[in-house]
Amino acid sequence: MDIIRQLEQEQMKKELPDFRVGDTLKVHLLIKEGKKEKTQVFQGICIGFTGAGLNRSFTVRKISNGIGVEKIFPLHSPNISKIEIVKRGKVRRSKLYYLRERKGKSFRVKEKRQFGKSS
Image (tube, rainbow, N blue to C red; front, side):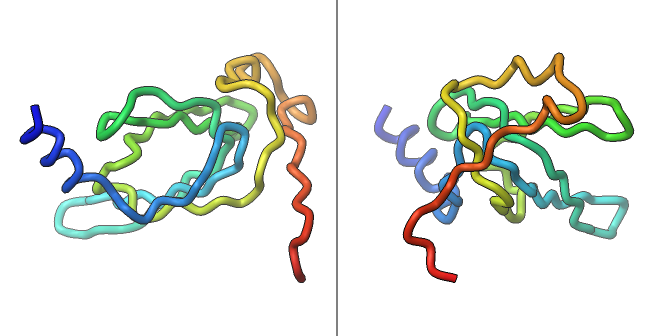
């Protein structure tokens, strides 16, 4: 079992931002089209985490043209080039599945106030 754990540690990404459920994220994906590679950005609210270790994944939801779109991203995937935090959300739950029934202004999550931030 130690060999498997050691291999997983080697494949895990070290430089990941500390984001939580409720945060608005920009996930930069590497898309391969034939021989070309391009970066595509998916921006939305993180509504949940699943798994542990190398199998950890997170779900991001956005509303595009009035239709809800969810994508599940493996956290340590080599296809994710960068994860940016746009806003910190203030939530009291670990899964925000109730946002699936919401649209418009009720889809918003309160922003966490940060004290001591110099600007």
